[in-house]
Image (cartoon, rainbow, N blue to C red; front, side, top):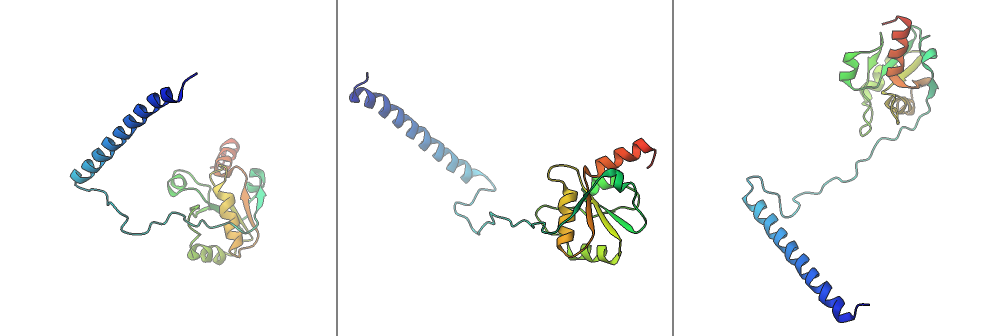
Length: 169
């Protein structure tokens, strides 16, 4: 068993050495910041937005299987919620691209465009991930007042797979 004096003899030098190392690191950091051409400010010059409010998809959207999606009519509108570069590599015929962003709401012009098309059903397909961008976009579209909105379970990857296996492009 250690005596209190022995514990002090072990702790104090360790604590002293840690403080010396901390002080040397702080001095080195300050020196490096001074000699940098684009040095960091010592104090914040403006307030930073720490929390960014994300839009909450508040509407209801019905899940739809790929088999149901293969029976689309000319009265239906297929929206691809994937990124633009993914859409340009491959997309379903007659689909439009409205990229879903988890941090910003859908622009009003996109909602007006969807409403102006007067589609019987709005079917949204996304990336198929969890959470699925298609499902989230469908809920947001529905929450903005568009009715009869559905999303395809599995997203565009499942549509592409089904098209390739049925000889459609």
